[in-house]
Length: 267
Image 1 (cartoon, rainbow, N blue to C red):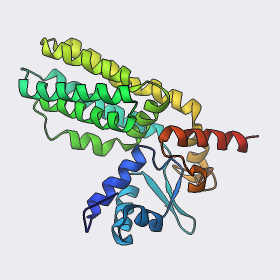
Image 2 (cartoon, rainbow, N blue to C red; image 1 turned 45 degrees about the vertical axis):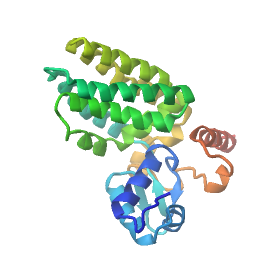
Image 3 (cartoon, one colour; image 1 turned 60 degrees about the vertical axis):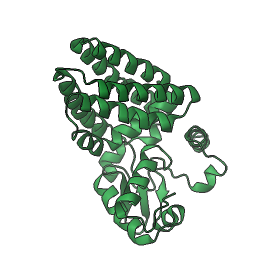
């Protein structure tokens, strides 16, 4: 819930974007200006403005006379933005010439928080800490302003990553990988740290493939590309409305609902 009054368009945009990325609004789900305004306690004007920006980011798609829908995860965009992310993060780490102990101290605090979140099974908190960890790695190389460009480019990648947290690689594994990267950096072993980071970043592909097998309805398919454009029509995206999720608060619970729904409709 947005608490500041009146909220800005940017605040509303970031809130809805966060809910899409963390799967509170699932791929293919219908959303409405009225419901969003009620949920965020805002007027429809900032909602409408935010939806325009989300459409440009390919996180929603508007079908005239049918409604507005969260886009499905596009694997082409996942691969493209992963390429961009690897190019930036690996190049940045290779450029490190000295270790700033103040930033390392920030990273250590971040790692401790990661351990707590991973132990508690808090995917949303861990995801936020994971993002901050990678931002701090860029800061360590002196590239303080680059992270925003990375985050702006990767919403489809982030949804695939977040889904992976739920059903593939657990946060605890990523936490351990982060620790090993930092250990190499602390010891001045840049090349081994870069190799570990490369392996770590590429884990998203195995996680995405696993998620694709479990939840193909969350991803753009070839039929959608051919017949309905990038994300298919609302009819093609087998819709699940809010009543289906009554009493289901966590992403894990919602994913179980989606799985059961599609199994029943496939019979």
